[in-house]
Image 1 (cartoon, helix red, strand yellow):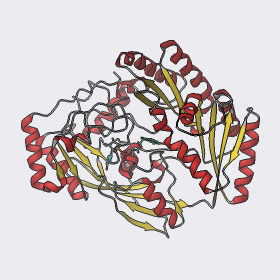
Image 2: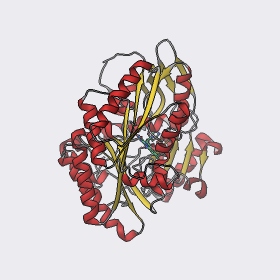
Image 3: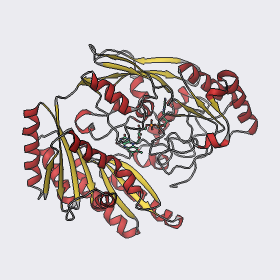
Image 4: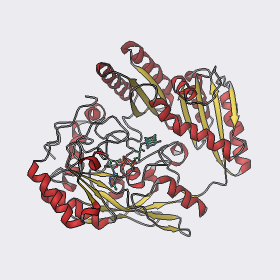
Length: 476
Ligand SMILES: Cc1cc2nc3c(=O)[nH]c(=O)nc-3n(C[C@H](O)[C@H](O)[C@H](O)COP(=O)(O)OP(=O)(O)OC[C@H]3O[C@@H](n4cnc5c(N)ncnc54)[C@H](O)[C@@H]3O)c2cc1C
């Protein structure tokens, strides 16, 4: 199941030709790629999902281009897959049956930063880091911070309801989306949501669209709430001899009512990968917590002391507080490059994103270790421990290891559900997790969501093959 393709039929040659000619007529050759080599760059994302090279790629420059691309897909009856930065981890922007890829990455305008109201209006191709920099220059703050922030874009962030290290204190993308311009495959342009702090008019359509993984609508303009930028930030790196102690430290921090803005956990194998990538880390350390507190300077110092005291009770072996912005940046750069460092350990890796109640982190890690040993599959874990959102990575080299990896993944998901957790904290379901949705959700709940999908997309052309288990698409 790991690398299998969903049951979405490839469009006929006639339909594909029709789509290409409709696109070229509506948008002109500068916005439509049809050469195989050019289209091939849009066949994968940052996951192991396997796609089919798209027949055309639309480089949208505005929301009218999006509507034109959607109309071509509808008229030709071919699938269309929205895409922004292509950094997704579950194959969300991977075209599973070819057709059209609709890239909104070229829509890069930060249209407005309203300093008095504390909101921003952005296009879907704005790179997250650029938004962070722009609002922080104005004294405001946009908290969601997926570690891919230098290359992911707001369209993908909204579609995945992205999280990140700071979600522990500040919440996830959904908490900051006030409204969206949603372009539907039926040709409608919907402005859902509001520009005000509060608002309960009608159903929460914005809430439904956030996290819909490009299956219900394509986003144009996005209205985001900002909050005042914290005055001061203090970053700490703490080392433990094993992951159990690090887990106890996290529990102690939470039990003491402390809310660092992030608590990032890295296990022993992850530290090994970081060492191989040139980071010098105490050789006796078998786990690391990177934590950050914010507020005014005095509050930061008080909180950092209390966090450090909590870590003492869990046998911390080293506490390092970043002394300046350069040291802080160095710590985070190591954390952000870690995923690439891990990738170098083996030819293939799959990063699963799950959440368990925080008190169950230790139990889950023990079970993952047991499964890895029993099935002889290499694994490592890091993630946002403050909110119980961990990334369990399975590593392998050769194809004949895949069946064992699949078993390890299924065992992980079964353990997560048994511990009353959830299958995804921030990466979404996409293609890779679709076969497992029914481990967590009842048939009635899945049917309700498929019915909703049908309202938005009766022909099942918008990003088909995502979220729902194979076999359920035909009904959409
Ligand atoms: C190194 C690394 C670290 C990461 N760390 C985190 C992390 O800490 N937290 C986290 O949440 N994620 C993380 N991710 C995953 C990924 O970066 C996020 O899911 C991100 O939100 C995807 O944004 P993107 O622009 O790359 O979207 P894409 O990969 O292009 O698309 C993702 C989904 O959004 C849909 N989509 C894209 N644009 C639109 C649009 N305009 N309208 C409608 N739907 C659209 C696509 O169809 C697809 O389903 C990480 C990924 C990597 C590679």
